Length: 423
Image (cartoon, rainbow, N blue to C red; front, side, top):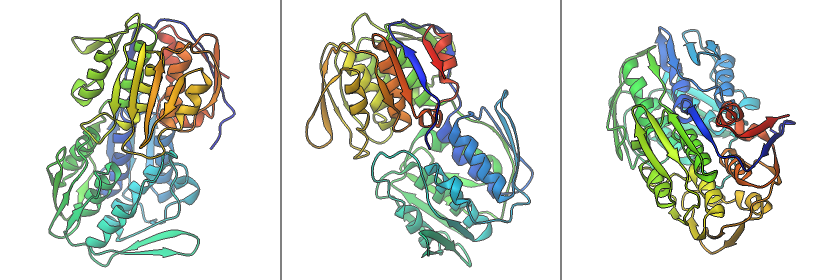
């Protein structure tokens, strides 16, 4: 979905001051879906970021029959799903974000039926959904394609089962955990993703009455219960939003302090920044991030958590463009997550394709302001970073993509001294 808005960035300013990391989009989305499991009480979520994906997810809940009171200023969502009866997901909304898949698990668990047409999201390569459906089938559901491309998932009864993820999928694990919560008996998910967002999501489910062990490891065990009730929870801080702000200081030679950086969620990423010459100093509940006068080159290989996050690779490539020397970046998670290379070249970056999703970045490039289009959330973040470091003015189009993952980003960067304007 294209946006007529443009973000203009005047580069060349060192960032200084303080900023707060937003709540985690990737933790809030499965929590919103999990609220569907509550047949008693309300689910109250704090620190829910007003990013586009979250706002669309709330609209999906409303269309299913939930009542939602969202305080945009306080970022508190109160969700009442007791009167939900609809099990068909609205296709004009699910086509806008991939996380719409997350509504299938709780609908199946509670109503024994779910229907979905199309899912959207970032175009970063093949992101197979079959492990969601294979898992549902293992629990006893019938998964059938319907005319027009939809998927109908139906079960007379759900029974605990052994499930396996070919790759440690974030949404796959969350979906199968929710589907298993009300199943009869015990379920086991092997080769599960271990991301911090899953641990936070499971913490909410446990407050709702779910019996889950092993979150944060490669093996998750779920014992089915009779029912779940609403609960109150504060969403974790967004490690990807924290990463963007840290990289913004690094690429501008800035000196900022951030609140909401959970360092144990970003160990590998922070270590790579330090290798580039960036200083990171803990000051109470704040983290000071000081960029060097000249960035050093870096080698990065993306992989599943706790390895280097694929979502921070585009931004790190922007930093590599400004670093003195050759950097090598290999993407192993998504085969098409190199779309930002074209954008960075528009700024004047020297990026040479190698083989097997490996690129060589020759730095330092004299980055110049450019007119670019955000192809996905993280590619948009890379454009912002390049714009902050570039000489002259940058115009970033298709802001809907950037807004899907980062709330009020121009306001927060402007408070740090950046020159940004949304028109």
